[in-house]
Image 1 (cartoon, rainbow over the protein chains, first blue to last red):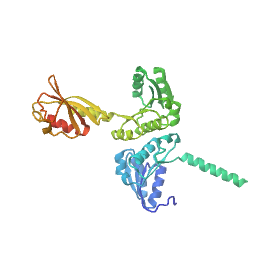
Image 2: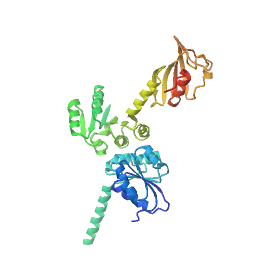
Image 3: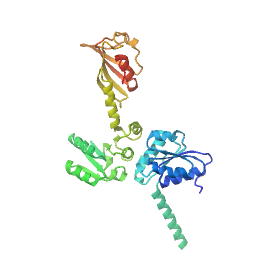
Image 4: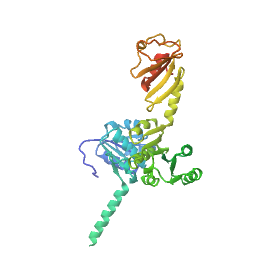
Length: 147
Length: 222
């Protein structure tokens, strides 16, 4: 699967490795980017660390020490992919506003929190909104086919 | 003032009680229905049952009419989001948050939180005061502990006794503001001589504090 078109090998930090984080990590690792993943639970880490080629750090990604250990000062991209919105926004804000990471993407379930991160350059992905959009596209296409 | 208290358990009750006693209007947001009921019954305040880090809940609590929002969640991240939303979406003037990790205190104040309260830092401050309190009487931190005002009593053993001020070589970020000698108040100049029994009032940055105290008392922090 080719998701991204990037020439240079980039330094990428992924905070949180549930399904979402793990999948993204594997995609980037497959194209030889330098991927570091952080998860607070040790048991989330080893299974994927064996399967793919990247660094895994057990720790709290809202902790500045953990982020610095993960190399946030030289990171080109950070993705906040934990299962908690507040934690994701906090990580994203630290990355963008404190460490000035070039690209910061965060996963958000509850878009009512938008004011906490908009106008900062943080890019938010909302799976629910994306699914709804896709659903609408599919329904429109179906209608056109019937005509 | 109109104050919104978001989250919290035991500490929320005491805070609400004290604020009510001082005549403030308090509204509480709590995610547990029983707690909301109890707070409403006991203190006669308006409570909203819901997640305080959700903008819709804050809207329901009329956060835009609040003068201050206090976030008491156990999670630092949740307190940050409550404060950010209060500040940016509802234009609340003052936001306060509890933080657990001392590092977050400085970090959050760079974001939308006006003041952070950190139990760990407060304890550390207390212990440091105790450790150096041998000859120090009062201790008044200002500007988030960046600047300290304190006084030191000089003893016979003090390395600064019987020296002119310019001879002592204080660090650049500290200054002796006045010397109390018996009933007399002396405004110091470079050639003023310090004597045992003098009480010296100092303003200093927190970095220079220990060095200044060491110069005056000869005591080093353990």
